[in-house]
Length: 59
Image (cartoon, rainbow, N blue to C red):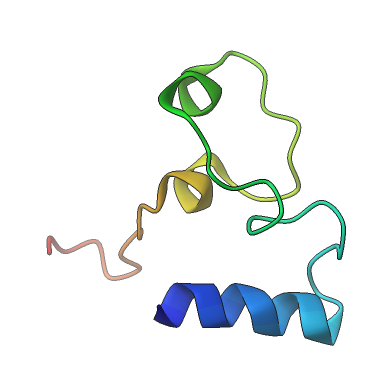
């Protein structure tokens, strides 16, 4: 829920495209995530719901 709110805020603030964003394009299938082609303005990790840890630690 927190990440969804962050995506909504990004659209509202203009930092994410209002028509081509993580929420508008959801859900992202495994085939889309694993495809050789990725032409979205956000990362595959974001689309898959993977949170990359900045500290390099494990969760």
